[in-house]
Image (cartoon, rainbow, N blue to C red):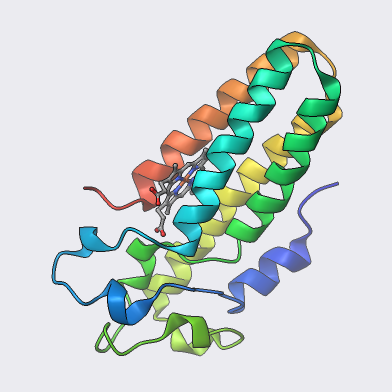
Length: 166
Ligand code: HEM
């Protein structure tokens, strides 16, 4: 079961639940001060769930693996509906005054560059989601190991491209 195309379209057409506390977020010139975002929290949660999955895998505990995988599938879908700080910052106008949480359902409020970058970001998250789905369909130890490697690689690429460099 793939992350449905309609979900991608929905995400791209502006269902951007950008829940940055914007007033706080852009209160400083240094963008690296933006640390606490909903996407960041989702990522942290994914990190701990992936760790749980790996532990389950190492102890051949199918139930534990499934429990964490279910969370990872949900979290990666949620992450596809959020906007990274680095993309939010490409927006026009006074960043301190834009409330991205109110931009949902109206992609016209995004600049061309933001739309393009956001589409690439969503694709990266979709690839991650597809890898979690591949884990869901595999019972083979070597195959699971190889998918876990791919997840690491995908994460590395996603962070290089979209995470703040600080
Ligand atoms: C299992 C895979 C992944 C894990 C475990 C993971 C983990 C993390 C962690 C721990 C953070 C720091 C959060 C914080 O300190 O607030 C983070 C941030 C971030 N990650 Fe990931 N990540 C994963 C995959 C990805 C992928 C595939 C992408 C992009 C396609 C991505 C994009 C980002 C971005 C943009 C941020 C900065 C948050 C923001 O802009 O609000 N991550 N990630």
